[in-house]
Amino acid sequence: AQSVTQLGSHVSVSEGALVLLRCNYSSSVPPYLFWYVQYPNQGLQLLLKYTSAATLVKGINGFEAEFKKSETSFHLTKPSAHMSDAAEYFCAVSLGRAQKLVFGQGTRLTINP
Amino acid sequence: DAGVTQSPTHLIKTRGQQVTLRCSPKSGHDTVSWYQQALGQGPQFIFQYYEEEERQRGNFPDRFSGHQFPNYSSELNVNALLLGDSALYLCASRTGVRVNTEAFFGQGTRLTVV
Image 1 (tube, helix red, strand yellow):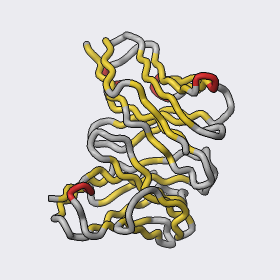
Image 2 (cartoon, chains in turn orange, purple):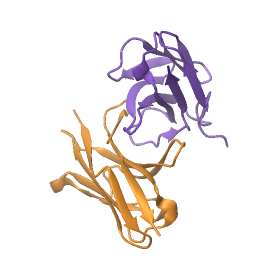
Image 3 (spheres, helix red, strand yellow):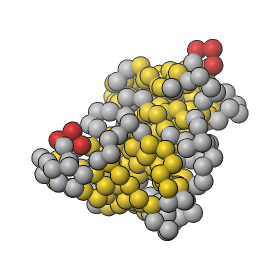
Image 4 (cartoon, chains in turn cyan, yellow):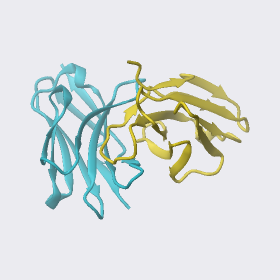
């Protein structure tokens, strides 16, 4: 069965600093991988997705993620953090015809002024 | 274009009661999934509906049931509510059953069981 592990339940960075949110997956077959963001009292918004095309995936709001099969990782990065990036971030994996999403526990990103 | 809409936004129920949550998918979408998100946790898959049938189910008891209507909207029903059912319930819609189509999420229904 596939699963996702997000390393670090809480990450704090300064405004303008690099953002790095870690995600490792476990899957017996090539996975589809996603990053979602959740703002307070909101649903989930898709940031980016990996679907076996380019290993470096660019998403919205300046975020990108790199799929590394050898490390079973799909870490999310942004070169320069903005105060509006403060939110909860979820990594998810999907496979199978019914596209069930399996989510990690989430990482809360705090931006310090 | 309205996205995924869920109703109600908040709900308070008593243990043992039954609740129905509703979801209207994004225009053009025909597949609806439901997720439960407990406080401080990631969403957990409950089930998915396509062509008015339950296509896949997560590890949830039979107290959780659903329905999809001909207009693709969906309901989630929970019977015999427990305190542990308190959570944010999210509905997600997409087009068809291809695995890499984007799922759009609603803002959720916050259910509190007292």
